Length: 171
Image (tube, rainbow, N blue to C red; front, side):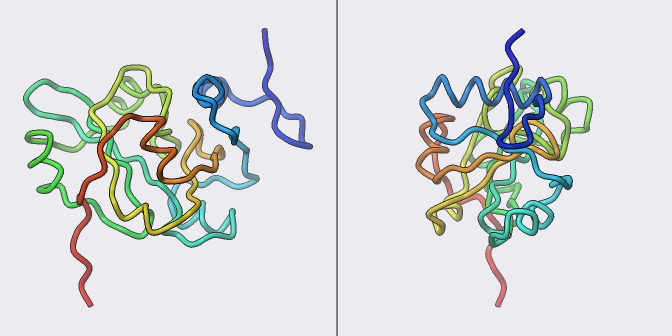
């Protein structure tokens, strides 16, 4: 069995993170997943652990499309909230996805859903707000796993369109 190791820790990565690493390698992505000491289940936790702005965290949120039960992946900036009406206008009526649906469709637990290497392909949208940053970080299939990328890399890796899907900011 091939083992993927993480930096100086030389710790074997969880299978879900290895799956993300293989997908990133296959796509020629220059940055492999890294494991954080503390869990990064929220955008704020990830930003604190990485020493970056919370907006630089690419949150992967799964919804359930009502017409065909498809998984809808919305990748948004960590400092933004998804406007479900805007998402529904693009992909059809959606509802909340429970933890079992998320794990079944993506192969990942909530808090570690990667934008790549899903168990079954998802309908995917990328929030334009991520393009405010040169460098962003996304979950790598585990609550402790993350990987570095640019917003354009996210488009390349997922093939998803960029859209206005966040709630309007109130000043």
